Amino acid sequence: MTDIEYNILDELYFVVSFKDLLSETSLQENTLRNELKSLIEKGWVRSFSSPSEEIEIELSDYEKLYSSLYYLASKKGLLAHNSQ
Image (cartoon, rainbow, N blue to C red; front, side):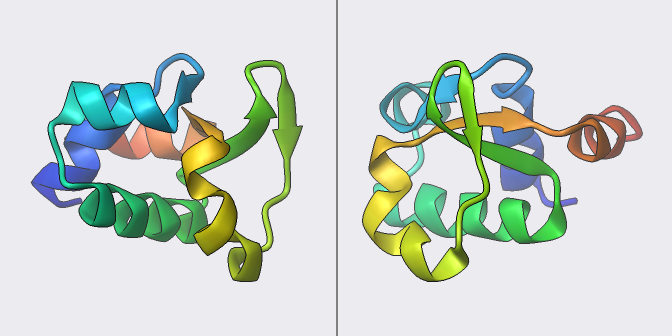
């Protein structure tokens, strides 16, 4: 796990909007977008259309939706984060 992945997962113990995550991690938008996509592909992060409604995002749709989504670390992601 990279330091960036660790820092992102550290913020995702609760559902967080992309905007808030961007602010909390101090990453560039493009970096955060790409890292989140990678974390979703690994199964370490889940995506939500609202704070209470989880969705299965098609990675082909991710590029146009990422900034309006909410994110949460999955159980698999939390286990990876806590094993560091």
